Amino acid sequence: MNAPRTRVQRRPVHGVLLLDKPLGLSSNNALQKCKWLLRAEKAGHTGTLDPLATGVLPLCFGAATKFSQLQLDADKTYEAVVRLGVKTSTADAEGEIIQRREVPALTSERLAEIARQFTGLLRQVPPMHSALKKDGKALYEYARAGEQVDRQARDVVVRELTLAIAETAASAPALLLRARVSKGTYIRTLGEDIGEALGCGAHLASLRRTATGHFEISQCVTLEAFEAMNEDERLACLNPVDSLLPGHTRLTLDAEDAGRFLSGLRRRGPWQDNECIAVFGEQPKALLGTAHIKSGELIPGRLLSPPEISQILESKQ
Image 1 (cartoon, rainbow, N blue to C red):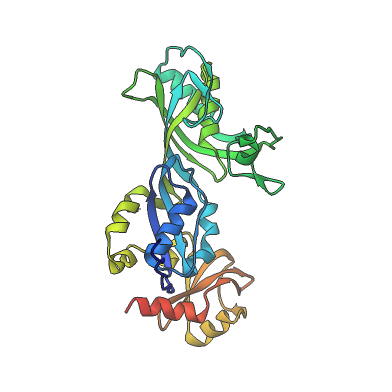
Image 2: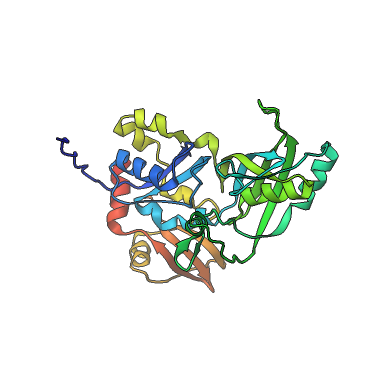
């Protein structure tokens, strides 16, 4: 007979956990695990990272979930190993081998030329083995059923790209790819397209996200280390909610204006137009929400609730 499951007593937790997601774990499973470890009431992630990928996965708790879209829109930086001469059905190491070709001799000049070719605005067709949805169903579900569906090519931007011959333990030739890209860019597709441009085909052997927006891998905690901590240590790992707003101009309101702002009322002041404002209360010093300024009016955007503000202030005491 199985022992009864212990019911977790949830609590309000607010902040951002920067997790170094381990190999083989889905983003949602990582989120649920950390939510359970923190006993958090509310949580969400900032975009999925494939189970076969590792690296930076910002997890938002409580009030931070209101600003998670900002990380969804942020640039991402990746390091990948691209295996040359072998194409797979999924463009990564999980798929079946569908083609083998000879790999030409590669020089640093040729790799630099290819890197330039794939830097800037690109049109990408999303891979069938992806979480992108069509008619309410993920593309990978169609792929697993043996179905191919039409996918619209999308504009993506590769802001920086470097390619070098990888030093791998195996004799198989491979490239080390480093790229900073816009949201919606598939590194698997990029690796496969580079393989075609080289005339030999390729697939992604490994993928690691080293940054998302201004969050970097050096700031992350591993799941193993997080599990080993006590509750106070886990809470200390959380970044403040306003860490999601690095590009926002800070504006502080006095108590009267802060109360009205939190009620959703516009405030007028000697302010210049600005699309990205992080609004704080003066006393006590606390994040109230986001706003934008137009024609001298401070127009509320996403707001924290008074209970959320009180809970965040209490957690700092």
